[in-house]
Structure formats: C-alpha cells, structure tokens
Amino acid sequence: MTDDKDVLRDVWFGRIPTCFTLYQDEITEREAEPYYLLLPRVSYLTLVTDKVKKHFQKVMRQEDISEIWFEYEGTPLKWHYPIGLLFDLLASSSALPWNITVHFKSFPEKDLLHCPSKDAIEAHFMSCMKEADALKHKSQVINEMQKKDHKQLWMGLQNDRFDQFWAINRKLMEYPAEENGFRYIPFRIYQTTTERPFIQKLFRPVAADGQLHTLGDLLKEVCPSAVDPEDRVSLCRSGWSAVVRSWLTATSTSEFK
Image 1 (cartoon, one colour):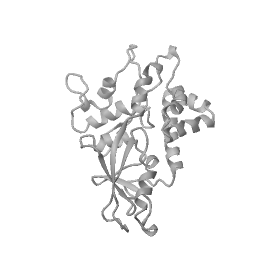
Image 2: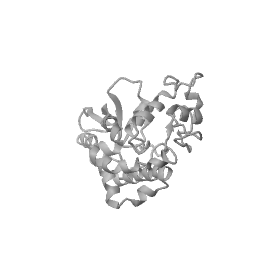
Image 3: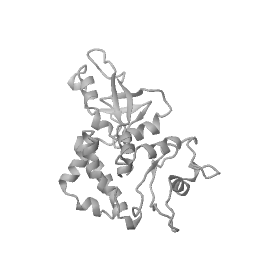
Image 4: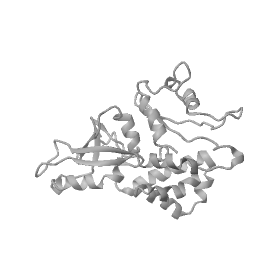
C-alpha cells in the first residue's frame, strides 16, 4: 500500500465542481442565489452539504423547510451512494459544474431513504466496511479493531482527513504474503441500464492456475457486455462507461474497497 500512496491521495482529493440551485417551486422571501462547492468524490452528499442547507434556509421561512434532498435532471440523488459514483452514473458526460437541484419539500419516499442525521450515514458506511472485510478476511481484521479505530475511520472520512482515515484503513487492505491476496475481492458494479442497481458476486483475486486476476477478468465473468470481442475492456459501450470509471476512481469509498 505504501507504493500506492500517491494514487490513493489523488483519488481521495478528487473533487467535482458543483452548482446547487433551489427548486423553482420552493417558497422564498427573496431570491435564492446559487451555491457553488467542490464536492469530494469519496464522501456522501448529506455529509458535505451543511453549508448548502444553511445558504438556502436563509431565504426561506422555517415553516416551509422540511428534510433536504437533491436531484439531477429529475433523478433523486441517493445519499448512501458516494458522490463520485453518483456523478459517474448520471452526469459524467455533462459540462461542469455539475448542476444539482435542492428541495425542502415533497420528499420522494419511493426513491430515497430518509437520512435523519449523520449517525445514519456512519451506520451505513461502517456496515459497508464490515461487509467488505467479511469477504476479504472473514471479518477478522475489523473485529480485532477497537471502537476508537472504527471512530477514527469514520471521522477521517467525515472531516476529509486522508492520513487519519488511511492510518486505519491500511489494516483492512493488507494480507499475509503467503496468502497472495484476499479471500474475495469486494466489489459492486453499478449500472443505469437495467432495474438491477448493481452487480455483486464472489470473485477471487487469484485464478486456479495461480495467475492474478485483472479488472478485465472480473468484467468478463460478471458482465460480459462490458468487454469487446477482442477481450479488451470497453470504456465506450453505452451504459458501462460510468460504471468502469466509478470502479477505477472510487476505491477508497465505502462502496468500493
């Protein structure tokens, strides 16, 4: 992991320039100016948008404010998806800044989970980390950590502290040399073209003949339509380009470990 630190740092500090605009039907006492923010790809919308919420609440009456939610071109944005994943799935071909609409009423109950507090985000994040470690280490590493380690992992993500986060996360990314890899590679390949939101299967990092598997091997097995006839990973197929980019650029989020 030491050799990859520069790459990990680049992934961590990836940002998406974003313009937040209040929905036109929201009742305001004066005009609501757009709010611009550089969103971290590895975080969650409801974790990094407190300033956005405060900005728009200044021009609204308290009785007109309920739970905040976001949408992009008519699609409600799931708060439990990492920001980079949302962008890659929905807006990667759009011009920047990413234009997100802010709502304070008419919460889309059928499309979004409620997020009552940051505790809900933390619970989701830690659940994903535990699921990943169950596949990698039979949960041995995460279970041997103390509660303060779990908290440091979470606080590192919440406060955008790379060193704080990776001081703990590196333990989850290590394995004994004699094992030549994790038991299974935890992954989710998200897609926009079907009703199934993501693909997740057991996949070993090493083939039966001892050869290390590649991303192309994984895609050939779990979603052959993402690989062209010459066995090269295709980044141009409709519906798959965002998925592949999300896999490659979000490896330190809770969705990709």
